[in-house]
Amino acid sequence: MTNISELEVCVFDAYGTLFDVNSAAESCKEDIGSNWEEFAMLWRDKQLQYSWLRTLMGEYIAFWQVTQDALDYALKTFNIDDKRIRSNLLEVYFILKSYPEVRATLEKLKNHGIRSVILSNGSEDMLEAAIENSGIIDLLHGVYSVDSVQVFKPHPKAYELPQVKLGFISEKMYFFSSNAWDACGAQNFGFQTYWINRFNHEQENLPGNKLYQIPDLSAVPGLLGI
Image (cartoon, rainbow, N blue to C red; front, top):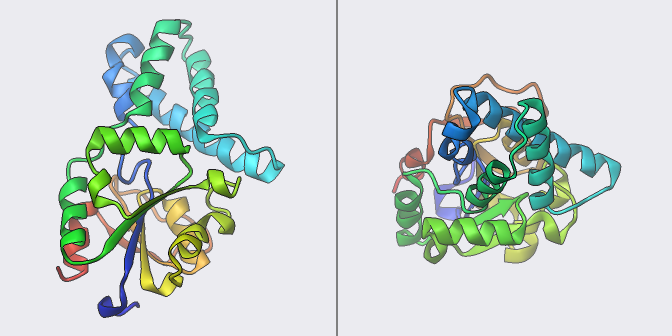
């Protein structure tokens, strides 16, 4: 375990960790209907599946296009053929809001000299929009999109980005993600990783699954002793 005195950087995943991926569907639930939560889950599942499969196929495209492709699948599955609903969902997804504890957590880290960066599958324009909408740009030291390496997490090349950009070895960083597959990927790569298990899910049977768990990001300052 990294000595807290050696910690330099906290690396955060974006979607599902800082930003609420279900909020887009929730904001349009009157149009989607009472099964909006199932719709949101399918949209997210397909978004992730397409990112992984495209990496395996060597067919990288920006995450924003992956997000649209996944949405179109969900719309067809739920028999929704309305361009207005599609447009509204994408508009909201592009500027997702952060979870309520995010700003206070990042503020405490900054006030104690710990840098916070984002490492995300998200496209650069998506990340910029969500960060601006959430009002947290002043609390971030860097924002790294996998666009620059053309592979999605959990490919090891994606997890190399913070080290390359900042010049620190992974032992001087903590990694935080609410996505268990992402947390496993980061742990397997070499980060000390914390899984934000917001919804009390079961552990994944994957390499790197010996993870520290916390319920949400408000626990981060406490585990760092600040």
